[in-house]
Image (cartoon, rainbow, N blue to C red; front, side):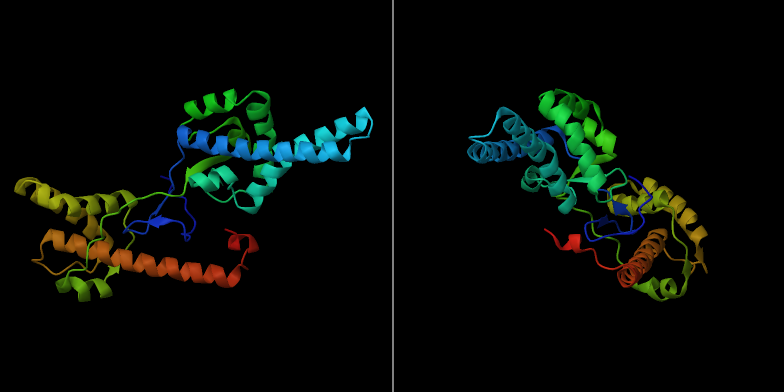
Length: 274
């Protein structure tokens, strides 16, 4: 998981430590289904276009007919998918039906350049070579990338993800006042996740392992707080208090940053599209 997330948007999943989770890359099977649906749509558009162009060029010479057929092919295989993915931020008809979306390698929304590059390379690997290079590339790639994705710097993610995160630790009442006034620095992601996992698994551990691991994590965590928690408090209570208050503070910070971005950056009209 990348730790270079600049902000947390409406589509992001956030852990108890306010760490954004990337949407998972789409598998080969679901991508193949999406591509098949797109081919059906393109085939229907091509058939309609052939019918219309044949009617319009019925009495024209052969050169005009060839030009019309070439333009129709370019529109259906390049212009149409480019326009659709640009306007919908990476969603074709097949992707809309299967809950997929094309994003940049940094997980941001794609633009016209990315959509055009994918369509141009797709004409060769999907239409000209009947999809064989795209399939092989997607199988080999750990993110299911086809050649067009490599050229454009994109990959396809699943948006309809059913992910259940465990509830975050609640603030212990006996440490609420201390945590609210303490200086609690941001914990390293690895340490914060280790504490979360320990608090979830603690009832399943043996008493000796639970005490040893809890003490070790307590000693690591208190290095990031000042003043130290009251003496005599159980290590697990301290861990829960620190994680709960860090989550509260990070949530406030993320909401403040989002509000600032909304004030400084004008709304993108494309965001209102479905």
